[in-house]
Length: 308
Image (cartoon, rainbow, N blue to C red; front, side, top):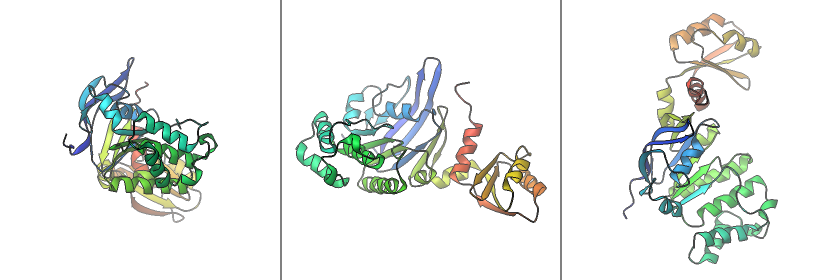
């Protein structure tokens, strides 16, 4: 079959558990070779949505395709062409790295299995540790093993669910370098993350809160659509200044970033009036472009909790 332009192309995808809607009528299109960042708070429905894409859950409503296969009726076909890296390490801790990769290759009936395992070990820098038990690995090395296992059957789509949680900054950077190389080679990646610096490394983003898709687009498009005005302030006694700002008309967020406060709101005139009401010579105020964290906290604050 000819490869469609979109690796993921779904409309109205919905999932309910009892009387709670955890994914609510989501439309999403992800182009082939794209790194798509999926963000949102814990419990927002990100993992449930991913599991519907890879054929582990059936949507209660909605239609669409993943890699050209129907997400409702061709789940077995989808599973054969997708690599899914779960939040928790899910490989055998009493097997070595090589044995784990060989086992996964057997499951997928990978041709020339021994050579495929060897290539995976070399590509992810695991060859020198191939005999080490998985249970003895640090978080960063477990991450490498999990990624190697996801890639052993040469998938067309990689679904990564918070893959860098709990690993050090160096391991995170190396992981992202590998993801960008894979995308350059044509692999499509959908990745969930809580890290704003990682989100900025994605080609496009979507923000999910309480089952609803609240924002999507490139980084610039998401920031522009938020229409959030933000001031940065430095100086002494920022804690007292923060307390004075909270609750003032036009002030929606007051967030500390080290020795700086970010003060944000959607009504620029009201926000400026609030800023002017607390100005004094000790502080330096500067208008800045709202960052992803400012935007996403604002989206979350305005979203309706589906537990209520």
